[in-house]
Amino acid sequence: MKNNEATIFVFIASIIIGILISMNIGFKGKSNFLDVKQYDQAYNERTKLYSELNSLKEQYYSTSVKLKKYDTGDEKTLQVSKEIKKEVIDNNLIIGNSDVYGQGVKITLEDGVDSFDKNVTMNQLIHDSDIVQVINDLRNAGAEAISVNGIRVIYNNWGLCAGSNIDLNGVKIVTPFYISAIGNKDIMYNYLTLEQTHTSLLQKSDVKISIAKSDDIKILAYNGEFIYKYMSLVNK
Image 1 (cartoon, helix red, strand yellow):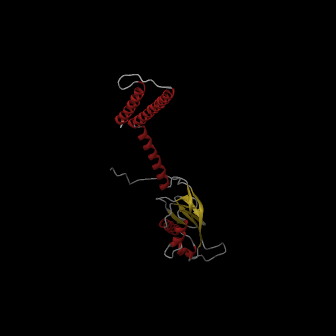
Image 2 (image 1 turned 135 degrees about the horizontal axis):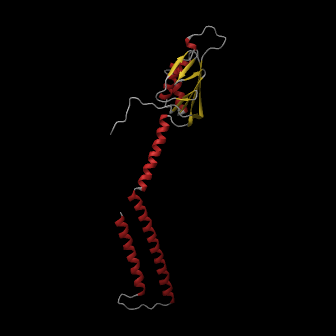
Image 3 (image 1 turned 120 degrees about the vertical axis):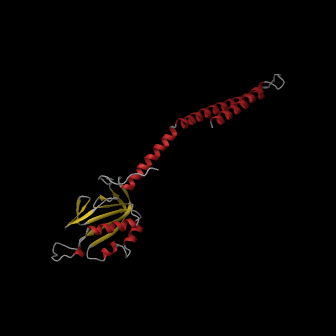
């Protein structure tokens, strides 16, 4: 590429110099005598050609500098750096390591009892399995980020029902349970109300549940540890 640039530059410069010479010297070595008008035209033409020649020099220098950057790897290194940065951002979004916002749905789950109820049945209570099933419904509906009572749900979340509260990743949360999910709000809402979903079954049970669409949901990043005990990268 460098040789092509240099060849083109020399070729154009040679043509311009040839024109400049021919304007002042005849083909047979005889001097050309110009009147005032011809002299002005020739002078203007020469000035224009000099300007074009300088412009070509600047372009050649600019191209040479750019080629040198490619040769030294500066441009390549910068591009690789940008790609790595984008990949890190994308990975943080996917694994839940970044705060995110967007449209989606908000679900409130609450035990179907009050302080005056003496006879409480299991169907009136929200269990950890209910939370898990609702989360699965949301994932099946295309949820990109989910939180329960402000706690980000990621790949290794676990929950355990412990009396009146649920232990989620070591954090005790109590009813009401507020589940937020970011994704296509219409698709998720319609999916959750399908008969075969667990969320729809809860609506027909004795617990209290509400589902609402929202255009502005914010979910905070996961603030726990990412622990990998058994999996490793495959060498390609």
